[in-house]
Image (tube, rainbow, N blue to C red):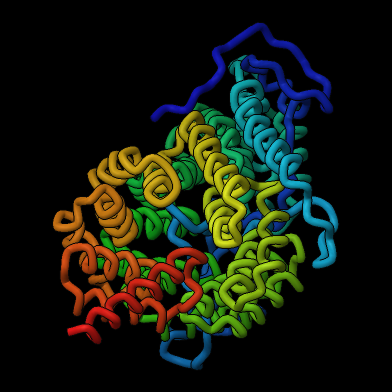
Length: 562
């Protein structure tokens, strides 16, 4: 779906503190209307940055700015995987788990003793937050972009602005403002336009604000107008396409960027993402090994680990990312990788280790959104429901994303707070509407949330549509479950089996398959899968784990009656 953007309008400067009007401002207004979301530690490729050569002795190539990659001495993931034992988590799948070390920040102080917001007021504020994001998308979508400056006497340049490598090391908020100021003076600096596009992608992905995607698209396209086929802009456009779940396009642009610059870390990383999300896992492994040989570092390590986790090789994923954490020095990197370790431990049912890693992530950055969400999930799984609810309320009050909204809704539902639960599920619909309006394919989000908490027929339509686009373990699971809740269990079974065929260890997948087998009459297999789900991660879902236990109890009772 194409994003909604504003048509050109008469140029008009705006006050820095006033949201931009619904118009296409000129390049000269680049610093004047931008509404910046506070995010820090953005990485060059949307992932954590690499450690320096001094941090990581070895023989492999390491790189910096994608425009001038140089040989370095970072050890590869292959070397790490064959070396020290350790623990690490998978990198998040791009469709459902954020792949960026950018620190998504929760505003205001936090503490376990904070008073829980009054329900009605919280519901109003949450809906307002969604509405505000949608308003930004339609009224400020071209803040730093617009009319060309093709006049004589202005040379093409990429040297005067801020590079993507600098973006990785600095504060994203400040960097965006600096880029805007620079582009006001040097509107034909193609390198800074591409870096600004990357910054908008990071703001969108880390804040759950898809209104930034049209801005990113225009910035990147402006860079390509000024310098066709420059690898920075092609890699940025690939990252934007991946963030919008347009993975075929992401793969195509990543390949184009790599033809220009074979050592572009962003393009190498996005290529892995695209292949993973298209379900081309063997090719993704080859791409990860290639990236590891060219640009070893945290961005590549996390993807390398995730490819192995998808194949059921948790040990390698853990080892590689534990080494990545040990060598991380930037707070953003430490928070990101520690959070991945926490997620992996949670998925294996090791909640104490999970909470330890989340504590480490929050020690590096106490406002890092994925760590706050992950800690709340681990608390819920450990039986600490009160703190889990408080933590998730804090997260969704600022950033109403589908994942935490659903978990919070299920925790409310488990406590009998059905009205509040319904409000969270409604906000998922609001978010997906905003996402679609800004060019994001949200069918997988719709299928997963609606199957359990919304329009079941809509869930099935969305799941079928997503399966037609890409055949992955995640889309197989989503389609299987959507078919199940619509009473089509025989049709669902092959997809449920495909979701678990690679060895990927996910208790939700096992639970879904077990429930589908139970409904289809295969009691033996149902019992095996449901038992495996609870053995792997007994707190995988506030409602799903409870249903799995109830079904197992019914199966045992039926066997006892025979």
